[in-house]
Image 1 (tube, helix red, strand yellow):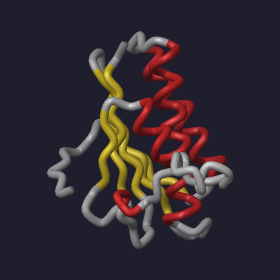
Image 2 (cartoon, rainbow, N blue to C red; image 1 turned 180 degrees about the vertical axis):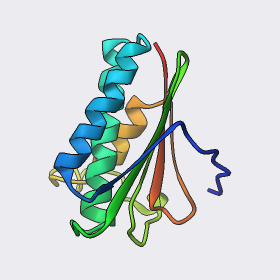
Image 3 (cartoon, helix red, strand yellow; image 1 turned 120 degrees about the vertical axis):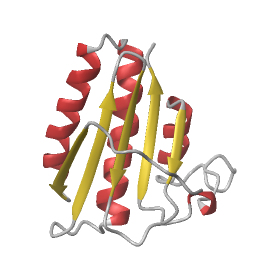
Image 4 (cartoon, rainbow, N blue to C red; image 1 turned 30 degrees about the vertical axis):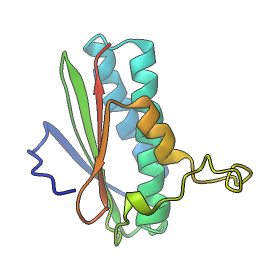
Length: 139
């Protein structure tokens, strides 16, 4: 799972707070519109970004407002790359149970990573499991 990621164009560090995250999300999505991304593409980025931020806040930082979430991104005419990093211990994404298994279907949680994978062109995590990279090709 090792990644040699390059720095991205924008990096914003915010308190682990969903309201602050929404402002960054709106800024990022505004740039997708500037670059002519379709509604479907922008929707996919929004869905995945919201899920990644909620996971960072809730699971990574355990809702601790003293911790931070780092959102880095680069958007151009061909694709959007977004990274969301928390200060948590991290996790192994391969250890997350399959939410489509019959006994897990009634559960109200556990579908976020599956949704992100379905809507993105690429989804990967750093070795520690506390940073996710979202990639969406422009369409």
